[in-house]
Length: 264
Image (cartoon, rainbow, N blue to C red; front, top):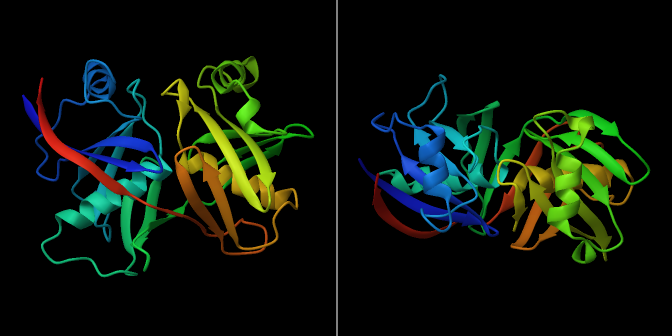
């Protein structure tokens, strides 16, 4: 089986994206996902995205996201790349600023291209917010995230410390994503250990969103627009009401890296 694909990245969070609107790519199993995402023996990525025909009335497409270990979840940066990829496939260009609905693992989302060329998606209303400790919050922004406020994320051994929290008994077999976060001159700085990838990623959209909500809940930011600096670049989270309980927009670049095909 030969599979055409496109490689995309959003602030260094990179994905293999496959056009399966015709419904021909049915063999999505764990061994294939692991092989495609492997950085030594496959294409290499932080996840695999399959863009399919709409599943729900009123939506433009369905996005299936799989982590490198084959598990399914929602992915913020992956969703932005999926929308940019879908937009590129259209014979009639989707106008800048026009909202498009799509479905994913956790239901419907809204996406649009911004005037600066960046892509914004509406995240789900946050749930399961808990203040774990003086420096730690738990937010579910489509995936569960621990936000751990530290003095300097650059001085943290993210893989070692993140793995400890991810696999701790507190979060069960499924585990949790772990974000090491600090506020520097009004900008949230963040490094993320992602479950499913089982490593640090250069950026994580759901983690960035969790960090912005944590910063707002702790009174560290007072504006609706929260700038975030990841290792892969800058993102912005727009909180459209006072406490972040309503619409939350994740905004940033979505860039095609290359395209090709692979035979399995």
